[in-house]
Amino acid sequence: MLDDRPHLLVVATGLHIYREYLLSSIGRSYRVHLLLGAEPTWERQYVDGWTVVADSLARDDLCAAARQLAQRDPVAGVLCWDEPRILLSAHVAEALGLPGGDPGMVLRCRDKHLTRLALDAAGVPQARSALVATADEALAFAERTGYPVVLKPRALAASLGVVRADNPEQLAERFAFARDTTVPGAWAYDVIVLVEQFLDGPEISVDSAVHRGEVLPMFVARKHLGYPPYFEEVGHVVDAADPLLHDPRVLDVLDRAHRAIGFTDGMTHTELKLTADGPKIIEVNARLGGDMIPYLGLRASGIDPGLAAAAVSCGRRPDLTPDRRLVGAIRFHYVDADDTTIGAIEVDPAALPPDTEFVTLARPGDVMSPPPKGSTFGRIAFTIAVAGSPPDALAALDAAERAVVVRPASAAHPAGAAS
Image 1: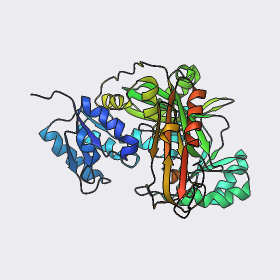
Image 2: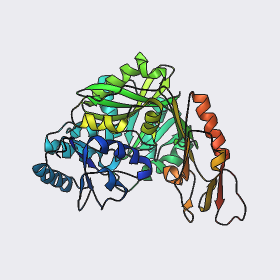
Image 3: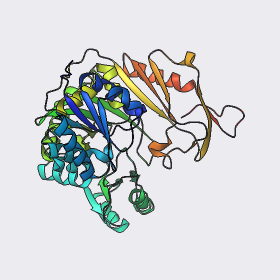
Image 4: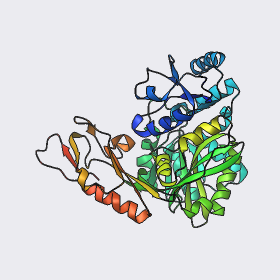
């Protein structure tokens, strides 16, 4: 029987714990072909085929593999949610003449300095910012704008390397943290640090599908931060009935930011601060959000983020019709001390509230640390709760946290609940 599902090329897949729900959904409606750097494992049940490329971080290798595939079986769209390969995927889409094939628009998202320049030229509300090579240059910026300021790497994600400084002494001491934080596959720049005005107010993110220049917001996540002066994302709350989804000021800034960057087709994860002067842009990412935020949106609203992402990558307007009005929340768990060797992570299933998921990330023998040493890589588990209201969802997370016990390898008795 002829399979008439659209043929979708997905570049990399990420960790199955964080991204499997996307591929499982897409695979029911699309013939998925993977481009990745190693043989697939968990992905196989959801895909039609795959190509292993010699270097999945090499543009020429990815484009050559995509062209060979398209010659055998025409491709309708190219999709990627793996941060190091977002720009490469835009080059693949460009090579195939498909939606999202504008590397310039993706670069203006990936490179936070280029984002700032584009937003500034268009007058979009945002933090004042400067690219600085030395701590002295950062100090000079802070002298002009005032404290607090934020130091951040130019092209990382997940708040890696981001730190606040409230005075000259802290800025001088913490500059190296922003300059030296890196991850495998990170871009190399001669000047890699941004110093920015600190924006006060609650922080949110908006995941949107963008179709032919129209920004279609799907989910608003209220971000919970921890471990100051760092900006570790310790949790998120997604309310399908959040009034910010229809707030004219938020929607206006969101639309203006996308137009300034020239973003026309694809998925975006935009972070904003709700300041006393109105919403201001922190950054725009050219992908679906991480931290299970799209999954929270799926559970809360019924809107399927995987199908939305696949649709816009194929040039189709997505169906974003909600079928429920619930609240999804997530909380990440960490050990209390640096270099803790995990003996066991235990949870009493009977003590978990209804509609709660507990997922273990660390295994016995893993050596884990809280932020800043551990950062996102220091997470040992997470809990997801779905309820009828934000207070109920947070109360369920609190109850679940009390049911979690972390046993360090050196301890004969429970060391207490994860934080």
